[in-house]
Image (cartoon, rainbow, N blue to C red; front, side):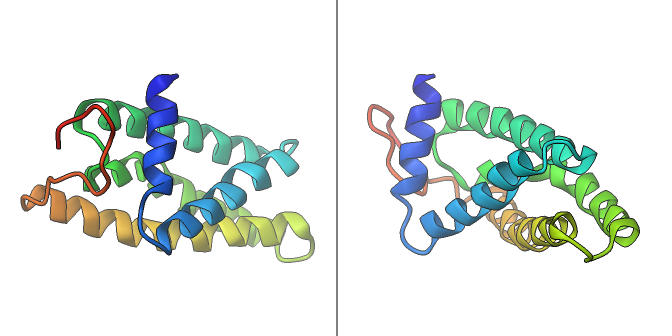
Length: 137
């Protein structure tokens, strides 16, 4: 629980516009999925969010708030094409379709940043992005 709290505090210490972007991602992925929880697409989005958070919390717990954290979104890589197929079946005829489109756009855009950050980490940019109290970095 302490790691979760520290992780969320570190996210909010990022320079603007990143806290705003994180808020948008949470709103679309989590709150949107809760709204449509009866749909299989929402359950998949929630599962990917939970799995991703576990990966990110593990990385954060060992390395701090580093560029590698975006690798937790790896579960979106198979999810987004599947959602695109589902969107083709559902269409933009209602709120569910528009929510799926929002997930595809927001998560797809985020994956671009995640890929760039992962490459930067692998190339040696391993200094934590934000300070974590009680952690050298």
